Length: 189
Image (tube, rainbow, N blue to C red):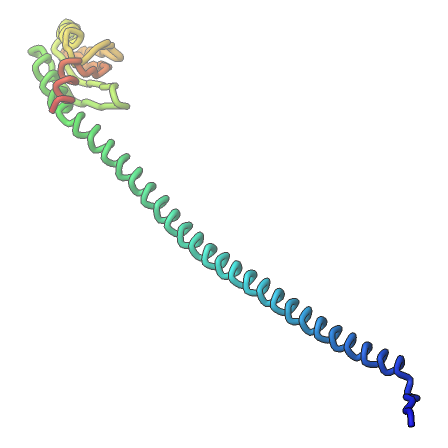
């Protein structure tokens, strides 16, 4: 007897095709999920790696900023020391000037004249106060100071003569000057 397949073969074929389709669709979705998950993990790893690099750079920058602060403090200390050294050098250069000043004043004082006070105001102004036997001795002192290499522009501020003993009190202003040959010899030392 001939067998006739009464089962709907088209429907069975369609069900098998649909099964295969859903199976392939599920596999593709699973594969897309795995690829998406792997991409997400890869991106997260890259972001984490970059965050670690950024944190390391921030700590390095903070360390460098601390070093810059220390360098600035050292620079300030260096500038302070240089300023002190310059002041000390200036004082060392001026040290012999006091000796020369006293020597010049002592050698230029004429007989019959003596000093009672000597004041320095500023770097170059010198005021001499003293007594002399006469006004002529004061003018001799002024002429001698004018001829000196260490003093210039002597000016008589006050002169008073005591009527009872004839002694003149005077106040003389001078400008201290440093001769060129002394400046050159001090620089060479």
